[in-house]
Amino acid sequence: MRLAKDGMEIEMKEKITFIIVLITVIGFLTGCGTPDEKSADNIQTNKKITVGFSQLGAESDWRVANTESIKSSLSYDNGYVLVFDDAQQKQDKQIMAIRKFIQQEVDCIVLAPVTEEGWETVLTEAKDAGIPVIIVDRMVNVADHDLYTAWVGSDFGREGKIACEWLKKYCEVNSIPSDDIHVLDIQGTLGATAQIGRTNGIVKASDLYGWDLVDLVPADYAQTKAKEVMQQMLKKHDNINVVYCENDNEAVGAIEALEEAGKKVGSDIKNGEVMIISFDAARSGLSKVLEGKIALDVECNPLQGEKINEVIRKVISGEEFEKYTYVEERVFSAVDHIDRVSVDGISYSVTVLTKDILDKREY
Ligand code: AHR
Image (cartoon, rainbow, N blue to C red; front, side, top):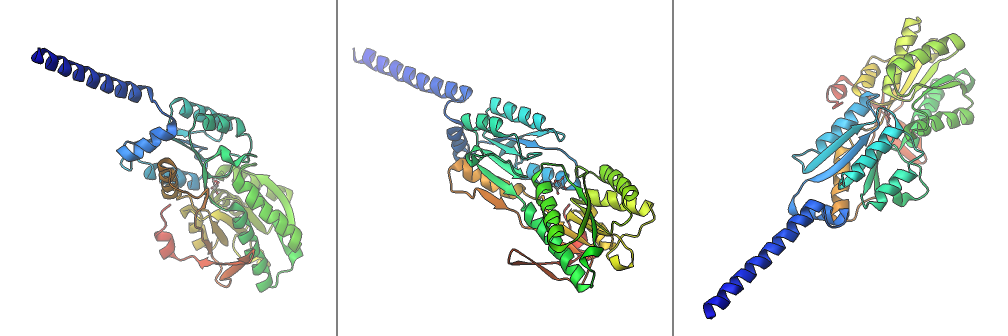
């Protein structure tokens, strides 16, 4: 009797153990629990964090460095499974990628948006699915800021202001009257935060300081397109003496067009040189600074991967995190007599570029 009872107890225990194991396996296979619970589990059990990353394209040296930085920080060895999608500058491709990430039930979505508008619907879908979204580089313009979890990127408005304050100081120091300044703005992709911030800078400064803003033409941050724009602008205007390029690839394209047209690029506006101002401070741009062909290059830092990694880990483990994280940026120049500029009460140092700095550049 006793034996039979013990036998039954053993059998019962085995059945209970079997049921518990079965429930755990079914739970694992069907992805039981909300995405946040799954994500917190990931951190506790050292399981990989699955991230869907929608990158807007590969239009510039900056973008390539940005993709590399994010891929290497969110690597398999670093605890991630990264699903990468290149949208080739198309917002509808980014929206499709995000919908796919939602279906795949990723732990987190990273979005580098091509332009600011038109994200409400898909971000609401991600929010309803309980998937945190980290916006990187440019911004999204949505009324409800809870549609995204956090943002990591650059202050493009400040970059534009720094460039224009530097030009103002350059004119003062070199006694160049405001009405002698004729600026062409080769813009980035219209509607992108980087374009909006940098274009605002030159439009407002031209208005304030009395510069002649001869034209504003978009070139989508691309070298070939910028070269074509510069060629057309040289046919249309004969007085351009400052070309404000909204990234380094555009600056390189503009320089090619100017030199092929027999113009001399440099900082000596008074003696007929055409001054180039640029943004990014990628190796391609800084090489032109060292040659004296780009007068000022305001850095836009693409190395955002580590900051994104930190934010994702905090979000997923339920720790406190900053909603907005700005990356650090510097200012480089070929001109050695302006060492600081002041913007909104903050003074920024301007570094005269040396070969040593260029040689150490990561991208
Ligand atoms: O959004 C950042 C800008 O986009 C960079 O200045 C540019 O090079 C890039 O393509």
